[in-house]
Length: 505
Image (cartoon, rainbow, N blue to C red; front, side):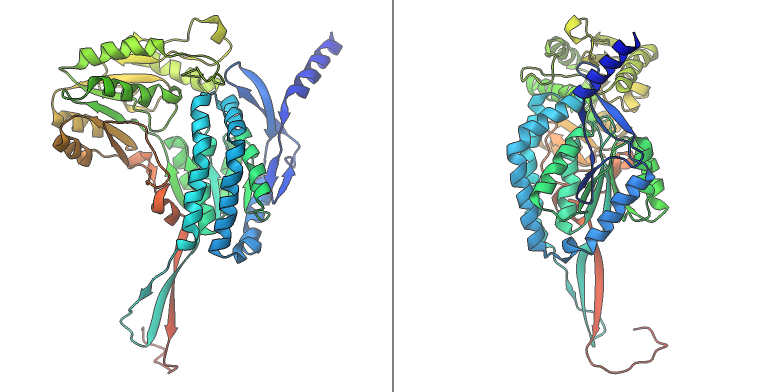
């Protein structure tokens, strides 16, 4: 009996993909030798292992990044950095499908989306590669005429990036590309549920020829991330994830005065006025909450719909939602994959039950699918809750799953009031044919991104970030590059004359 158990364990172990961390240009195990398994959410089975990094591993990575700042990377011109970043972009393209399959296996996001994300990665790196040699300082006419004064824009230093599990490489690009363009070095810590795609991506960094220590990857759970954000050698922390974790990250970074960029949670309103194109709006609502299984920070999880069209909108959504094709996320026909991991599935179920206890009605969904082919995965039906009041917890707390809360409004003023009645402020959408109303409402909503007659559209040259508890700072665009630069002011005395040492200026 024991021999059989051992044989099965050995066979299972041999089927797992055993990955290593990337530190200082080398592929390494954790110093402790410990590993952890990652689970394929489609079948609930372990498919890969990664090293469980401890504080010593983290320090090793940060030290490597610090050395790289003063090594060959720090000696490169901006144009030379741009060449390397372009080389990386060119390497991503032929590996995009492989990266997509790995990420889909790790987090269950459908292949049609991960392929699109990977296909778009080269453009993000190209954009910031082109910006690398366009980082300019200023000459300043100081009031002291005997001085020539100018500024330099210099890299902020070592960057620690804590990545989320929903779109690891897509969100890594919005951090890493501008950081490299600025001349920073980087230590990435992917989520413990999804380390594989980031480690696979590190192979392309290596192949592109970046000097050792410029990019490093440490893997592990919360303790690993906490060690990274607390490491004194880190100059900046960039984090994407929940607001609660973001607060902890910010406190940890403050202990050694590291700057932070935080892209956090959301409870975004999708607002439909009575003059909207209902078909387009319903499609936008579907994209906002059921795409990516609702596991996006910008999910349009609150549907604010005018009372005069509420029934028509909910009826169309109730017809379409159950028709969403759930299944193997690696199948191009699948429209919605599983929840990324078991604990998140339980969280989604908890909130649906909570919503019902608060007085909401389940219009459709609300449970795991009955299809036996999906029984092993972490699937949950696309769910619509009606009769929701904005004071309910399902309307105020981020669920991060395919659960839509329907809230009715009677006027433009009330729509804006409800839309802004949240601690978050990441995104929002306005559906109307009235151009004046569209701009008027967009100007009044407190959110970092507003779509008019659309939803869930992003670009690498458009800044992205949140208000309130949705975060601090911006990613993408020129603002995203500025986040990795610091300004140095230089004063050059022109006369050579001595001055009163006890007088300022």
